[in-house]
Length: 432
Ligand SMILES: Cc1ncc(COP(=O)(O)O)c(C=O)c1O
Image 1 (cartoon, rainbow, N blue to C red):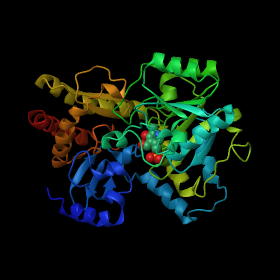
Image 2 (tube, protein in one colour):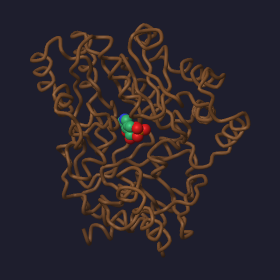
Image 3 (cartoon, protein in one colour):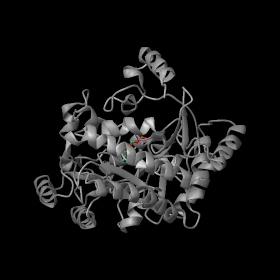
Image 4 (cartoon, rainbow, N blue to C red):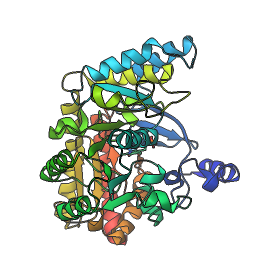
């Protein structure tokens, strides 16, 4: 398999962009080699600049729950574009997407559209501070909420891969307002809340943490978080940028049956276009400008083309059995690979929640916090990633990232992937 055209494009890109990319994890730093430059995608497949074809489990890092180039989403985009691309004034399409969401999602009553998951999390934090009149926030190690200054304190994912625990350029004063606690640790939480009594505006969590491995939380911990925040007048923010519309239409809130105070969305909500959103009860959302004093705005917020794409995608997600089929398909991918690893005696497991999966080079049955991941185990991922590419399977280029199964993956795609995976695992465990 030649990748010379991708390599050439990457060299050119390096002269334009820092590290040759517009988002760090794309640079293949943790797996080595050069990133693939993608020419096109269709269904569950992508093609690189050299014409190589891959079954894709990155799915643009989650937004493409229907796969690439979905005909309904594409048609919705074309129809919207016919009428222009942006007005900076309200359009009917914003109402349509909002109605579709709010009438099928009982955990929020009002919503505000923004343009990315980062913006959604950032705005949700401001809302929490505005509602409570408090400054401090709590986040958890291993959860990522976008590159928001106050939240880029020991964040996971790309940062963990790069081996830094925070970013340069963030004022000490901001960092001081953010407490970072380990996941699944009630004592640490109790202690922090006691110490900073009446100062904490918000506790932010990915209820299904999926940016530093897939750290599936004990439901009792999530319930405890809900009780504690209610008791202390703290806003509980569920960052559902990944889990929202992914593990079910109502995301993790619906999956666990827990009502947060504020929710942040991104990825799937935009059908592959740049959309984020945050939502809450009508009472909490009344704090947002122009209704209330918390300012938040955006030139391209609620962009009509993006709204149309999001609505087309979410309509498909509402089809009966959609999420059940997706979870079953994911099991049909994961189960035979794990069985193969067990037969061979490899320390390997695949954790899943709905159609999210994560490869763990460990024999642990639960991994609930980032400290439980052995960084040394990533050497297996590096080999596996390379071997999968050679066999026409594309997964995100970091062992801390999760993969996604889409509605477009066919039985043949899954069968091809299972074979490729078993072979690639054999190589990884003999070389790694
Ligand atoms: C849970 C979570 N929150 C926020 C973000 C930031 O979203 P975006 O990359 O759209 O800014 C991400 C991105 O991966 C995410 O996974």
